[in-house]
Picture 1 (cartoon, one colour):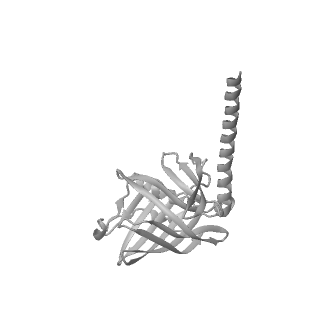
Picture 2 (cartoon, one colour):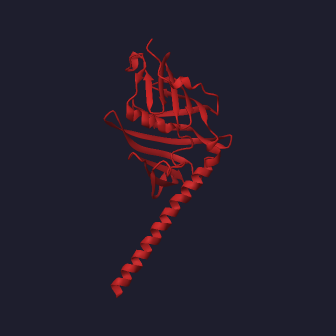
Picture 3 (cartoon, helix red, strand yellow):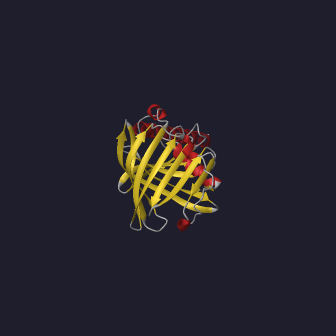
Length: 244
């Protein structure tokens, strides 16, 4: 009888803890989305243009990204007078790189895995917004320290199996870091980004500074210079052009 009662008591404690844990995840997500401006506000954003600048090996580089929410993205990067273009439009994608940067100078089809990864950037509002509707699951790993600050460590498992670890500030509920591995053309690539310098535009919150490991070693800092919400977009810019 005592063993039965012990097992029953243990089960109740575990079940209660699990329920509390799940509730904490929901509370964290709710507060995070509110901190970013709210789900209803993000639904009003149908397109966006962003201008960034960063430096690699002493070279100042500028980029312009145009997004149609949930559908299309085009990024233009200017390096030493040469343009690198990356574009996705639904399930198709292409890129154009000069020969000095490993390309042909002509539009090339983008690998399928890279298309899927790039397309995630069209989900304005962040990966936690409507994550359940996207078929993803979320787990609270625990509360940790990140550069001295208290953060909630969340593990997001997407429908396709991709895993992203998110670190949410326990005070502001902004995402301070995301990290995960992605398989691109048969290679596992570490995708890690630190976010800071948060600012609001029309009631929505954006990180204006992003730090990520540079392919050439060290850390690359990307500074956002401007963000424009709901600009008129000529959607033909996402279509792959013919060869010259």
